[in-house]
Image (cartoon, rainbow, N blue to C red; front, top):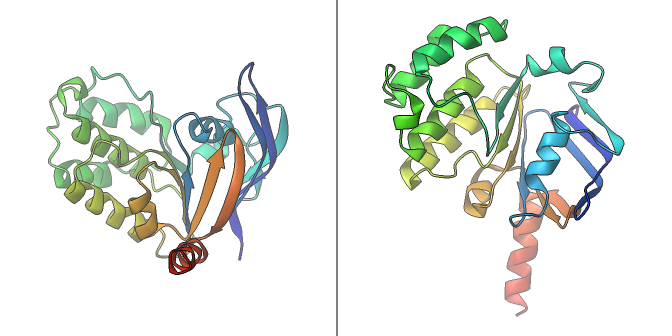
Amino acid sequence: MENILEVKNLCKNYDKFSLKNINIELPKGTIMGLVGENGAGKSTAIKAILNLINTSDGTIKIFGKDIKENEIEIKEDIGIILDEGFLSENLTPNDINLIMKEIYKNWDEELYFKYINNFKLPKDKISKEYSTGMKVKLKIAVALAHHPRLLILDEPTSGLDPIARNEMLDIFQEFIQDEEHGIFVSSHITSDLENIADYITFINNGEIVLSKTRDEILDKMRNSKMHY
């Protein structure tokens, strides 16, 4: 099965924290959940994969191409949600549409406003006035509206109520149905990942301690309970 994302021996050193030899393989048509406590390295790993921070060592390939050598081309086909930072909160969805039309070649205005309408987001209200859940939905609309092949999501369902979370999870599962797309998602809501992830990767103190299929992990957990 062809990988849509490959990370090999990724390292990043800070004074008091390091990512150590991160290895990830995400096949097309699958979802990988990255799980870890706050401070374990989830957001740092995602920023490194997106080439937003300099790394000490390792290679990152997306769509079979090196992110450092082909960053602009690759990012045309990635939908991104980061836990921190977004467009100015003084922008309305209408403003964001005008900006994104100039950034992404494949920006689909009709699809964008379809999501905005489905999510019941006021088009003329600045996002600063949105609730936390509405802000998350706006990020998701922006991430999906340029027809990306890969979604890289940092805590995408944080701040959503259970009904809205299920709605988002349905969208994510639909996204990978053609088996040409993939999703790499960090979350502290492990129940979400149990429902949608094909692979679950645990990170602790900057190191990957376990990376298996969801079914392997759930079977292991069930067997542990049986022998308890």
